[in-house]
Image (tube, rainbow, N blue to C red; front, side):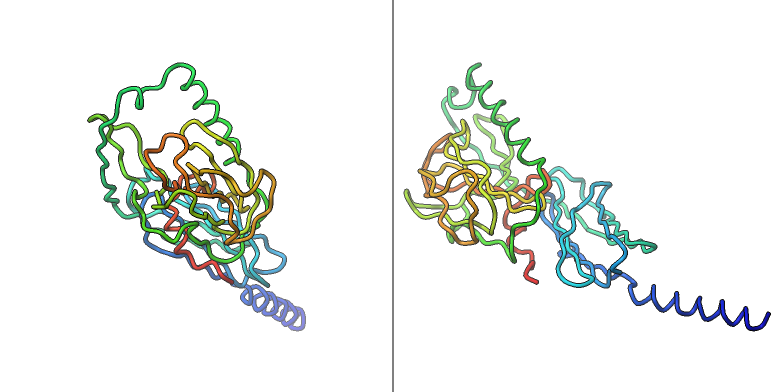
Amino acid sequence: MTRLLMYFALVFAVFTCTTSAFAIHADIQPRNVFPGDAFMVRLSDIAPSQAASVFIEGAEVPLEGCGEGCAFGIGAVEIDTTPGEKSVIINSGPYRLSLILSVRTPNFPEMRLKLPQDKVSLGPEDLARAKKEEEKLKEIWQQITPRLFQGDFMLPLPNPVSAVFGAKRIINDQTVSVHRGIDLRGKQGEQIRAANYGRTVLAEELFFGGNTLVIDHGAGIYTVYMHLDRFAVNRGDLVAKGDIIGFVGSTGRATGPHLHFGVKILSINTNPLSLMKLQISE
């Protein structure tokens, strides 16, 4: 009986050491965000036999490998998220961790514009076209493909921001829309570069965006380039970070040459500057 007890004690000790060796660790950056911001969860000490998963507010954040026992995922919070603490839940085998992501109160500015009414109200044909294009883009955002991006993201133009993310555009004293990207100053014909490695999934003229380019970087991350004068790549092309993909223009609903740069993460409109700040490099 004594030998049997000693045997079970030894088995228990070995099991405890084995599982504790893979006591999963997790970190989130940044811990404080504004509505519309991106964040990254990095996991380490994942047991080879245990799959890991990350959820925020019930929505899963896809994980990508970053070496032995390591994984990371990039997510975002909606622009209309109520400020407060949000739970980020990590599961891996018998382990369950909870991290806190603090969403701060935003201070989005207002942009007041005066435009002719025919530039504000859409006719039936234009409205139908805009809705059709919106549905086409929505289908793109819903696709989560294998990771293509490598390391940190970069701005496609090294120029000042002329219109920030989240700004309320009030046209003719009526709130019309919220700016869901950033506008970068640019000269007609100035080169635009890919924010990271990816595949071009859209390169066509749209009603609002004019010549619009969309790059799929994998893991549910897309970058969007609008109002281009012309394209330097075609749909289906693979691009490397820094490749020339187009040229600044004023096509579509634009009042002058500039680049509207947008980011989608898991179908969420995301502040591009928040993605640029993430330290993704492994």
